[in-house]
Length: 405
Image 1 (cartoon, rainbow, N blue to C red):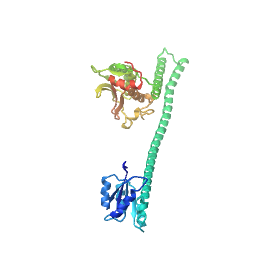
Image 2: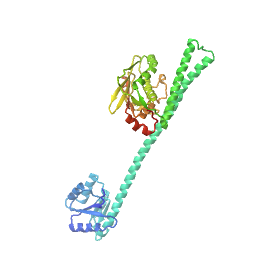
Image 3: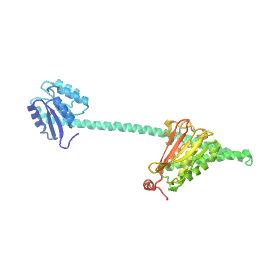
Image 4: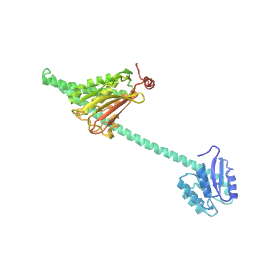
């Protein structure tokens, strides 16, 4: 720590006359202002170092008790990192060399003219010390930036690979229902099947389901593109969330019946309205509930619950008795281009963007969504939303979203 009043120099010299002469010599420096404190022993100097900010130490080698080298060793043990100058007697260059090997920044031989060069040695030492510190800072920053750059490069490579895998997967998944539609139409046009007969009706039903899959995939891609570009707009108004849940469960009833999965929702009397985009909230709930049905075996249950939470928020919970999700995949399932291994069978064709879109749509409402699960014990997806008008104005209007109330 360098004080505004000057650089604090600790001079360790047991001869009072030599100490005073050295102090006066240091104060003659024209380059810097120094504040010099004198100690007569290493023990006294150690107490000074412990109790106050010191910027530099000049120590004689021959001292009562511990010598200058022992003082330097103690400083090294404490990792003080202070610039240290060793003063030695005439003909004692070995001690000076030893001091430099132990980490001293400089040394000075106490000859007949050492007092005249002492200020220059101190100035030079301090310049070297500051230069070393600046070099260390730059090297540290370079290392940190290199680490950050390597991490960014790894993330970019990973994202690039994920995009490649995503494009390959979507291309395949779109081609499958498209081929199904093409084959169905060909069977009808070629007269192989008659649409008025049972076999023909089944072919049309296959084509219809395939078109539905294609529509869902294309809608996912369009929504994802809008969210990525920041062009998704939400139209906010007070909504009865229970009516929206009924609408979602009604639309998924046939899927649940086909899978022999029980849908459960118990309305809560007097539950407050929330401010949301009804269409987008239905989209989120349809995705979460639809996934729950898909990954729940026959005779299982998918349940939707509402509960009031702290800080003027509500929780919408979609739970199931399905296959569950591994702990290490819980965060990853909401990421772009990520697909959890083992769940994308032919029965569950799609873009794999559904949960990522859900997360972004919930964020547009000032909310958050997360999953809780355990393999073989089902899953719970929790949507936490605010329903206060104040939150609406602060968090959506200010972002430039189109809001209707």
